[in-house]
Length: 351
Image (cartoon, rainbow, N blue to C red; front, side):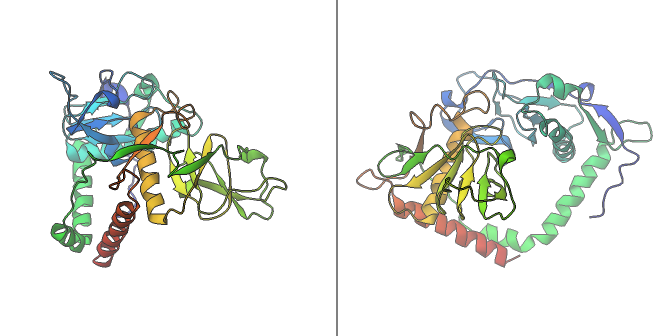
């Protein structure tokens, strides 16, 4: 699709373009598993970190709105009613407009996300008040009002292109059997348990003091991009890098819980722990565990408020499948990840 000409677009303040609401004070820990989306500050899965059962007589947040996270500017259109995370500095805000529908809502969510990202290049967090004052650029009608019809038709055209290019994949998916995993009989483990990891504090280096004259060591920061690697740096005499195959875990920041298996020797920044398997664990099992760590972190902990630092060696735990002896079921984890890899390869082959 050709680049969009925005020269005729106009700026609108988020307020009064939208009415702004905040969810009631909620924490996911108080909810049982269910079928209602629990939307919080997260840049994945449309902001849905899990599906929960509302409390008795609890009023849901109304769908057909846009949710915005002051933590990292993640912005999504929510089609159905949901449980929104509220009550803390990292709670989401909700944007409503009577002209919203699914198509123009997706358009607006993209524009808002791109605009607000500027706030977080230099500041740790925005706020609901600062977001209300932000201006976004939108297509307009000849009367100077937001062109809702253009926004809707634009997304519809994208959908049409996507359907055409992925028709073979859709056909494959219709034949696939995707089942939800029952975790009711799984068990919680601490990362430092005998069957899992040694936990190290990392090298705690400052990137601005590193050199890159002859770089051959990865430098891992608190990021969810590029396997956590921010750049390559020089080897530092008397500081041995951690080993290939070790796992890095971001203890705080926007991407709290970001967890990666490292494929080269590496140093770490502040607030990045290193996990080294006490026993031989396959790459697939490590992938499974890193996913569970990230999910646990994003669900039960808050960036800048209740981060992992004081929990990782005390009460932080993850759910894992178990065998008949109630030990981690390594075969199950290895086979599951292997099957997911095969499924992804099959989908790519039919494109």
